[in-house]
Length: 143
Ligand code: AMP
Image 1: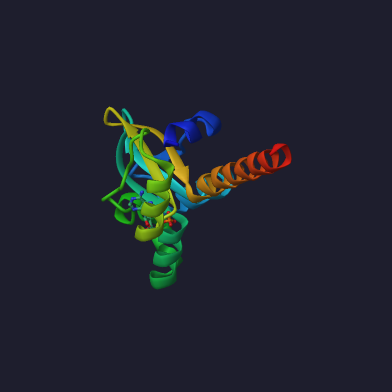
Image 2 (image 1 turned 90 degrees about the vertical axis):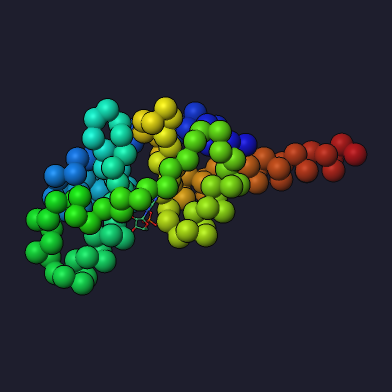
């Protein structure tokens, strides 16, 4: 099963922001959209960085709330790991676990085309397990 299957269900919308926006604005965006990370892009869809709630908590914890007026470009992770749509779900689960992040933007032809979070993967995996469970029950019942 590939990432394309998850995108077909959840859609391709990605919440993005621009590098000059402040950390405070991004915190507000994360809260309003009820998400954990935002992709920083420049048009048209080129990924410049990613900033998650963890980055905000870390820098505010270390340096205080004054950093909320800093541009997001100063605190984002620039070396973004992205994936292609034909990547296997099992491989990206392993990647997230090993590298300890919870968001993976998807890039197609050099442009942002979706995002998967660890929450999306857990949801997908639970549905898959339920499906396997039901298939097994049916098999046993009809054997
Ligand atoms: P997260 O677990 O996604 O909240 O992110 C934990 C840390 O990894 C933060 O510093 C993020 O900026 C960074 N991060 C999250 N997703 C990615 C990614 N796909 N590529 C590189 N860094 C990431």
